[in-house]
Amino acid sequence: MKYDKIDNQLFIKNRVNFSSKLIDKSLAVFNSNDVFPISADSTMPFQQHRDIFYLSGVDQEESILVIFPSCSNEKHREVLFIRETNEHIAVWEGAKLTKEDAFEVSGIKTVYWLDQFPTIFNQMMAEAETIYLNTNEHLRACSEVQTREDRFIKKVKAEYPSHSVKKSAPLLHVLRSIKDTIEIELMQKACKITESGFRRLLSFTKPGVWEFDLEAELAHEFLKNRSKGFAYTPIIASGANACVLHYIENNKECKSGDVILLDVAAEYANYSSDLTRCIPVNGRFNERQKSVYNSVLHVKKEAEKLLVPGTIISEYHKEVGLIMEKQLLHLGLIDKTDIKNQDPDWPAYKKYFMHGTSHYIGLDTHDVGILNAPMQAGMVFTCEPGIYIPEENLGIRLEDDLVVQKSGAPFNLMKDIPLELDEIESLMNL
Image 1 (cartoon, rainbow, N blue to C red):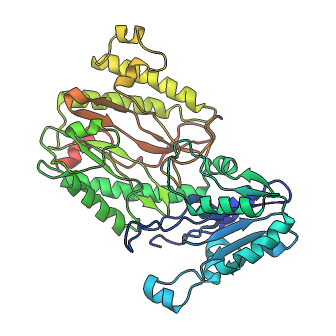
Image 2: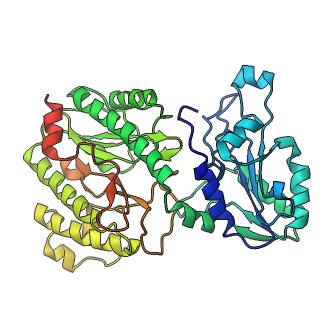
Image 3: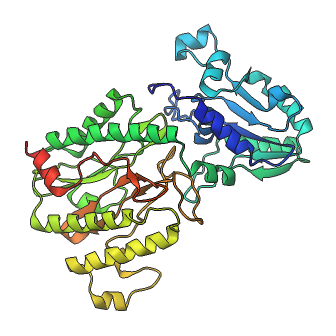
């Protein structure tokens, strides 16, 4: 892995917390992701399933974690199965984890080779009455691809029809929503790498560069700082492209007078950061661009004040909508008649601000978390209001990552990344 070794106390604590939520005589199973094929003998770069990583730290394909807290055999209360390495694999693919390596990474004492899984798992299931299976319960999940986890679930239900089945996802959504201090440190590292990339762009950007030029500069900065690269597909949207929320082509020339919306951020050790900034191609915002920028910045600052313990996410989004409504009135984009005649299910402000303000972030950019309970200290959210005006070829969105504190304002993991208009213009014109 590119990243530095993570303290395995994180994974030990995560397993203890998860195990405490399992019912008696039950076990839970977690599988690594597949290496996904493209065509011929080509594959996508491997990305570990976040849940097995969260519970073990193992960042390798063909791995299985079994947690069985009440197993009569103490050695089998936590068991890791990994692909057996050998000299041939080491020559062609590089060294894989040894059993000793796997223990150092995870803190799990019992490690077997993967070919022993059927026999040992059958022994464990003979004692267990319930199995927790790991399904993707994210509300935005939408995939036709069958995963290694999906195949395992189908197989285990067929082979052990008498066992009760429960879901791991609701338990993990609760646990993963509150970040450990080690996780916060890893996310801070991702944010610092993102900062390096953004500052690089401020001195590089000028009329005539292309969106993919900026993407290349970011990729260079991220990789040289031990990131695998972008935490998500980068959005580098100049001019009218900024009004396309998920614009990812990044293939247009950046022209003087336009603003570039940069929704770009690095990952580190599988943890995401998520940044949005807007910069003028020629180094100077015009007056209209400044007005819209300052309105978005105002909404962002007011929204951040609401990221405190006790806030209900659904109510938070409604409150931010009202803050945005006032700014759109100020900018002349909507009027009081629009508000009077608005559809309550799609308020007038949605014409220019059509997405939510915040989402969980962590091991996933759109991380899992509790959606129907008050915010708590240790939760990490983005804050990303925006105003999009297609008729003016202008889109402004500003975004940081913030940690909810026990009291007071949230801690901004991106506090050192330039945000104010004057600072951005100053740095672009050094």
